[in-house]
Length: 227
Image (cartoon, rainbow, N blue to C red; front, side):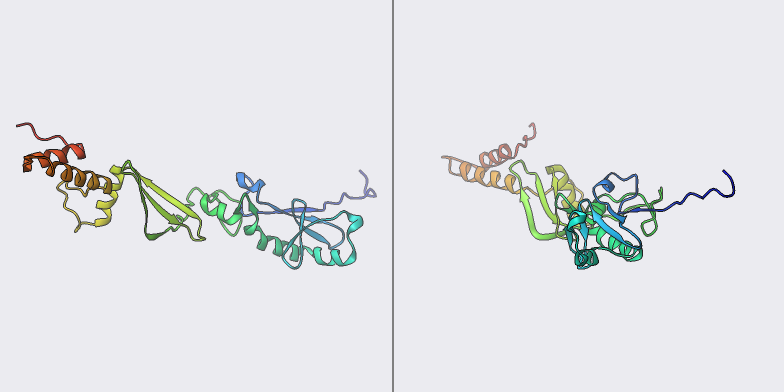
């Protein structure tokens, strides 16, 4: 190459904007592109859809069908295009979930205003859940399902087997709650079984307290002590 040969030009004609770093799996679904369309003219795209100045996405027509009015509403200088893309990125929707909702459920490990850098010390903030009073379902097997909701109203639920439900009740009672003597509260189904056992045994001819007691123990699956 001689001193009179022309130098090669390097020009960026496409940018990507996403909440997710390059190595995060959701990025391929939640990425906006900014593409060059001529001198100081850029389009903000979500696949075949083009962002307008009104903030709405519109299917981008063929070049022959783009009149001056449409071009004026859907082309921007690079700074404006980047600003609009950043504002729109959290609100991209795939399968009913926005990019921000997916990010909150499983934040990627990166730091600093969208800078895609690994940070081994990064700890995502837990989703703050809310519980509606009495919003609980009791299963026939004594399991417990607690219905919850996230910051944006998205539904969550927590299912507990009988043993974990009992531990949670003790933990919620605190140190001044139920004594640590092994005593536990009957579940609703256990209480119902015991109640029906009392009703049935007490109605038997010649029933005595021992008969009623043993009926209740059988209903609860508790063995009597060996005499």
